[in-house]
Length: 103
Length: 388
Image 1 (tube, each protein chain N blue to C red):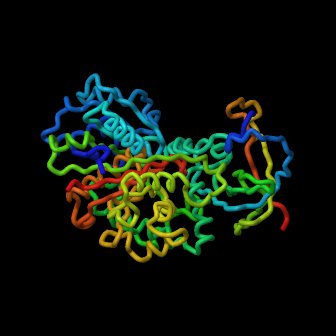
Image 2 (cartoon, rainbow over the protein chains, first blue to last red; image 1 turned 90 degrees about the vertical axis):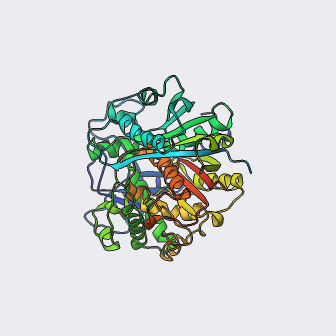
């Protein structure tokens, strides 16, 4: 990549990120689309990564309880769903999940 | 100030579940109304057709624009389809305005259409979710409702608004749509009913969401100096602005829509006006939260005070600044590609005194339409003024 795809800056460097962050907002999805393999209900969370930037993924590890997840710490996971190992680009991307970390 | 273009007539096919019709037949229904109400206009006057339609594939049909034009006796003219998802109709309107303004065309049709109720709901939702980013949003379980739900949760939290406020948007717009013969959901709803409707993506419930609808609408535009040839009561378009933004997940600021603010600023400057001088608004309310955000982004009130503006009833018909007297997407319906031109149709009727008295904005002179594609990725704002 020669320039940032968001701000067009050419001043780029590769940096490792922790992939930890916090839940900014979330929703319990009750009505899903046919295109996503997990069937609702599932909890979708928008994560602000500690190093900056956002990712959206399904929240894991919340057990049976429904709660206010805003502010909760998470570890972002990229997981290949069973059966999708051979999916090729443009859909080769692993799916994003957010594992809740202990309080 | 010189208008950009003038609307001389308009039409709208009834929104709803229209089994047994192709999109082009719904479009023909809208065009019939426009021509019937403007006897001095003939098909031979039309120089171009701009058609907003998001998802031709619902009908396993491509090339809808030329086949719709040719199939309606509009032969050999340029006919092009535009897609900006939920604001496709507004994109068609803007391109028609630009076509007129360039001097290339004297008269052009801006239309919008969508036929989508015949596919299973989960498939329709999957297709609509194509509006969001494939690898970073859709791929990870995002639906358009889910994005708006996450925005709604942030909004309620940051500004001490409640789910009742979201419900009040639905109540207001259903009350307006009840009196609109073209509306899909013509029923009065109460706050209690909205709150009790089943969850779609918390905190949004079924009655916070616009319905999946079939429908079509159109406006016929001409160069301002030619308007008198066709009608004694044209409506001038005095601003046409458009802006885009990154997909939701890539934005630094998640609350409010930058594209709306940018397009509104351009539109107010072009029209030499401001929010407080506009008599009525038709805004994007695919989800109830969108209308609250539109109040703030369009400058009807300050950031965080939309719920209080709504509570004041000032945005109801009869209030100081009625919003969505048509019923909005919420009650009138949301045939995706038609919603933008549907707003222009409503404004043409309002400013020429042709709407049902229960939802008429009396004495309205200036109006604004705000259409949004996706979760704020594409926004079009138009300002309209009654001639004279």
